[in-house]
Image (tube, rainbow, N blue to C red; front, side, top):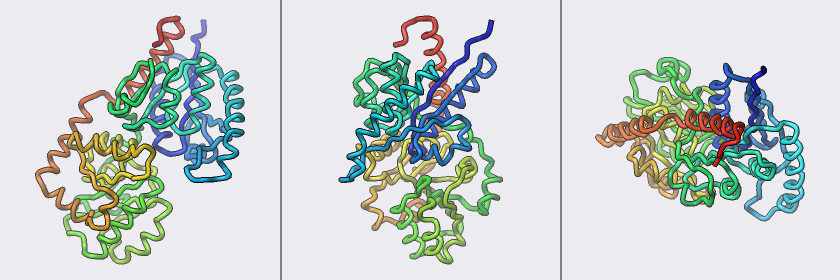
Length: 381
């Protein structure tokens, strides 16, 4: 008798913060089941998100919905949104009917809303992975009919109205970002093995306010010969930053974006970064303390809440973006690394890592258990 296979739909994208957790979970489920039964996984996204740009490297078939998010400013685009939603609902219903998944997994972003909604209407079990301490609007609107909700932060629980089983797992991290070799990273980025490395990290698009602040710091003084900077400028700012940095580049290794984040993290001693949930999860998994500058315009000010959670645990310090003009990020980073507090921060990060099982394992195993319970006709709540 042929063992029935497992089918899953992952809906989430737009940014790496929604897409990469989905990839991590999908990869782990496939690893756990590949020797037991056939596994078929598809992703749902849009042409406007990172998932589309990564489609050739995604590793899974990508089905596209013609939908956009609500523009925050007055825009003609918003007038078309109801028609796009209706179209996306019909496309989703047809996709779910043809594919007949066992579970739909939503990881955030506007594209996951129609998929989670229609799956619930069709009585297909849905689960949600919410990365931030303040849940996104999609999570808040679809939580009511979910079977499971996996939280990156305990603080998110109070913002949800649901009968679902809520599990605080932390955020799932792709295995590809951990375990990098320091020696290889130093070689790839042309760094000095005798210096400590400050990682300036703004995400794939960079963080313009952080970039400008660091540039201002470099124009005032040279970096101590005990330290060096590995600087992800983002693709948008790379040319401007390299042109403006001038001879200060000799103390820095600049790059727009790297697909070898394992090597980036392997050489970093301290990170200066935004407080996106994915960034924090990866820094934690790699044992890197941080100076966090939350993006002040994030929905629900969730980056500040994310940062506060890490500060409370002793793994980070927080700097308000409004204070960047007065702050010397590089000097503050060096002073921090030469203080007793830095050792305490490293211990706090290590404690956070060892305090729970990897989120990706917990989530993948629970989704598999949910599928097994569903097939047995058991209680799935």
